[in-house]
Length: 196
Image 1 (tube, one colour):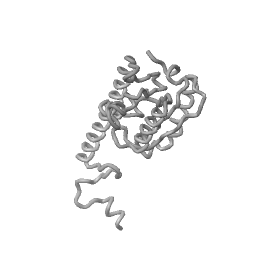
Image 2 (cartoon, one colour):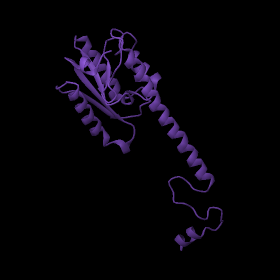
Image 3 (cartoon, one colour):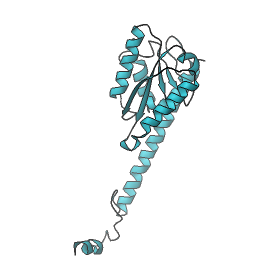
Image 4 (cartoon, one colour):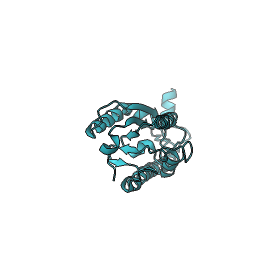
């Protein structure tokens, strides 16, 4: 089983940071600090090349993600050992199918991170993904599993929110507006008070 310390030794590190929403914008800096601290704890004292963006973890066309993959592959063609560092596996993707596409088939199966021995290192979870050259059973099991769990949590939260918004609308409460105390009255006293 390969460890973060082992794969980081002598490697060129690219770190990827992602948030999904504008509300999370401030956490890009937090992710960066966590990754820097994790790299230092794993014995990596050089500076990582940073790629960061605000984008959904279930999209395959994230600009900085694709730029990072391209950069990693270019470095490998120069003969350099390359590692991609993440705070957690869900920064790379929130969908295990997308993980497979991004890691094993982008831009093609033969030109992918997996085929070119560029592992993903999740510093919070202490996971190193396997590559074609260096399989890693623990990372290959846990990485997609954690991504799937995170994706399911988001899907469940989204479903619950939609149900709650529908139930509220059925009760006369429209999302994003104050409670309408007189929703069934044709002449709404509150609205009339405001009008006068």
